[in-house]
Amino acid sequence: MKKMWIMGLVVFAMVLTACQGSTESKTLIVKDAWARSALQGNTSAIYFLIDNSSEVDDTLLSASTDVAMMTELHMSSMDANGIMKMSPQENVPVPAKSSVEFKQGGLHVMLMGLMKDLKPGDIIKLTLNFENAGKISLEVPVKEP
Image (tube, rainbow, N blue to C red):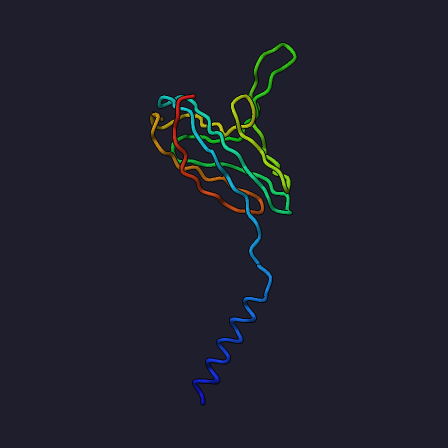
Protein backbone atom coordinates (compact mmCIF):
# COMPACT_ATOMS: atom_id res chain seq x y z
CA MET A 1 0.00 0.00 0.00
CA LYS A 2 2.82 2.38 0.92
CA LYS A 3 4.61 1.65 -2.36
CA MET A 4 1.49 2.48 -4.37
CA TRP A 5 1.09 5.78 -2.51
CA ILE A 6 4.73 6.74 -3.19
CA MET A 7 4.39 5.68 -6.84
CA GLY A 8 1.24 7.81 -7.17
CA LEU A 9 3.06 10.78 -5.64
CA VAL A 10 5.95 10.38 -8.10
CA VAL A 11 3.56 10.21 -11.09
CA PHE A 12 1.67 13.27 -9.79
CA ALA A 13 4.95 15.24 -9.49
CA MET A 14 5.94 14.22 -13.02
CA VAL A 15 2.59 15.37 -14.42
CA LEU A 16 2.87 18.72 -12.62
CA THR A 17 6.39 19.22 -13.96
CA ALA A 18 5.30 18.42 -17.51
CA CYS A 19 2.42 20.92 -17.29
CA GLN A 20 4.55 23.84 -16.15
CA GLY A 21 5.81 26.36 -18.68
CA SER A 22 9.52 26.37 -19.30
CA THR A 23 11.54 28.51 -16.89
CA GLU A 24 14.50 28.52 -19.23
CA SER A 25 14.99 31.80 -20.99
CA LYS A 26 16.46 31.97 -24.44
CA THR A 27 20.06 33.02 -24.21
CA LEU A 28 22.53 34.70 -26.46
CA ILE A 29 24.29 32.59 -29.04
CA VAL A 30 27.78 33.56 -30.19
CA LYS A 31 28.81 31.90 -33.45
CA ASP A 32 31.26 31.99 -36.35
CA ALA A 33 34.10 33.25 -34.13
CA TRP A 34 37.60 33.52 -35.55
CA ALA A 35 40.83 35.36 -34.72
CA ARG A 36 43.39 36.91 -37.08
CA SER A 37 46.82 35.33 -37.14
CA ALA A 38 49.62 37.56 -35.77
CA LEU A 39 53.08 37.46 -34.21
CA GLN A 40 53.91 37.70 -30.52
CA GLY A 41 54.03 41.31 -29.29
CA ASN A 42 51.72 42.55 -32.05
CA THR A 43 47.97 43.04 -32.15
CA SER A 44 45.18 40.86 -33.45
CA ALA A 45 41.39 40.90 -33.56
CA ILE A 46 38.54 38.48 -32.97
CA TYR A 47 35.31 38.52 -34.95
CA PHE A 48 31.96 36.75 -34.37
CA LEU A 49 28.19 37.10 -34.51
CA ILE A 50 26.02 37.56 -31.41
CA ASP A 51 22.44 36.37 -31.91
CA ASN A 52 19.97 37.55 -29.25
CA SER A 53 16.71 35.73 -29.97
CA SER A 54 15.37 36.52 -26.49
CA GLU A 55 12.83 39.16 -25.51
CA VAL A 56 15.43 40.97 -23.37
CA ASP A 57 18.05 43.52 -24.41
CA ASP A 58 21.57 42.69 -23.26
CA THR A 59 24.94 44.41 -23.29
CA LEU A 60 28.42 43.04 -23.95
CA LEU A 61 30.47 44.55 -21.13
CA SER A 62 33.93 43.11 -21.75
CA ALA A 63 36.05 40.38 -23.32
CA SER A 64 39.07 38.55 -21.94
CA THR A 65 41.67 36.05 -23.09
CA ASP A 66 44.96 34.79 -21.74
CA VAL A 67 46.85 35.26 -25.04
CA ALA A 68 47.09 39.07 -24.86
CA MET A 69 48.20 41.61 -22.27
CA MET A 70 45.12 43.73 -23.01
CA THR A 71 41.73 42.96 -24.55
CA GLU A 72 39.27 45.70 -25.55
CA LEU A 73 36.01 46.07 -27.46
CA HIS A 74 36.72 48.28 -30.49
CA MET A 75 34.90 49.91 -33.39
CA SER A 76 36.64 50.69 -36.68
CA SER A 77 35.20 53.55 -38.70
CA MET A 78 36.24 55.83 -41.51
CA ASP A 79 36.52 59.57 -40.86
CA ALA A 80 35.59 62.37 -43.28
CA ASN A 81 39.10 62.23 -44.82
CA GLY A 82 38.81 58.53 -45.63
CA ILE A 83 41.16 57.49 -42.82
CA MET A 84 40.25 54.37 -40.86
CA LYS A 85 40.24 54.88 -37.09
CA MET A 86 39.66 52.55 -34.16
CA SER A 87 37.96 53.62 -30.97
CA PRO A 88 37.52 51.60 -27.77
CA GLN A 89 33.90 50.88 -26.83
CA GLU A 90 32.84 50.94 -23.19
CA ASN A 91 30.22 48.29 -24.03
CA VAL A 92 28.20 47.01 -26.97
CA PRO A 93 24.38 46.90 -26.78
CA VAL A 94 22.76 43.69 -28.04
CA PRO A 95 19.06 44.48 -28.57
CA ALA A 96 16.39 41.79 -28.12
CA LYS A 97 15.41 39.85 -31.25
CA SER A 98 18.48 41.01 -33.18
CA SER A 99 22.07 40.20 -34.07
CA VAL A 100 25.28 42.18 -33.67
CA GLU A 101 28.17 41.36 -35.99
CA PHE A 102 31.81 41.82 -35.03
CA LYS A 103 33.56 42.02 -38.40
CA GLN A 104 36.56 43.46 -40.19
CA GLY A 105 36.10 47.21 -40.59
CA GLY A 106 33.55 47.37 -37.76
CA LEU A 107 33.15 46.06 -34.23
CA HIS A 108 35.83 43.63 -33.04
CA VAL A 109 37.64 42.39 -29.94
CA MET A 110 41.12 43.92 -30.06
CA LEU A 111 44.00 41.84 -28.68
CA MET A 112 47.00 43.99 -27.77
CA GLY A 113 50.42 42.80 -26.72
CA LEU A 114 50.11 39.18 -27.83
CA MET A 115 52.02 36.89 -25.51
CA LYS A 116 52.53 34.25 -28.20
CA ASP A 117 52.26 33.83 -31.96
CA LEU A 118 48.73 33.17 -33.22
CA LYS A 119 49.10 30.75 -36.12
CA PRO A 120 46.37 29.44 -38.42
CA GLY A 121 44.92 26.30 -36.86
CA ASP A 122 45.59 27.43 -33.27
CA ILE A 123 42.64 27.63 -30.88
CA ILE A 124 42.43 30.41 -28.30
CA LYS A 125 40.00 30.84 -25.43
CA LEU A 126 37.82 33.94 -25.23
CA THR A 127 35.36 34.88 -22.50
CA LEU A 128 32.63 37.42 -23.22
CA ASN A 129 30.95 39.05 -20.22
CA PHE A 130 27.33 40.13 -20.75
CA GLU A 131 25.16 42.21 -18.43
CA ASN A 132 22.28 39.68 -18.39
CA ALA A 133 23.58 36.47 -19.99
CA GLY A 134 26.73 36.46 -17.83
CA LYS A 135 29.92 34.88 -19.11
CA ILE A 136 30.08 32.99 -22.37
CA SER A 137 33.31 31.10 -23.07
CA LEU A 138 34.40 30.28 -26.59
CA GLU A 139 37.15 28.35 -28.30
CA VAL A 140 38.20 30.54 -31.21
CA PRO A 141 40.12 29.22 -34.22
CA VAL A 142 42.94 31.35 -35.61
CA LYS A 143 42.74 31.99 -39.37
CA GLU A 144 44.40 34.03 -42.08
CA PRO A 145 42.26 37.04 -43.00
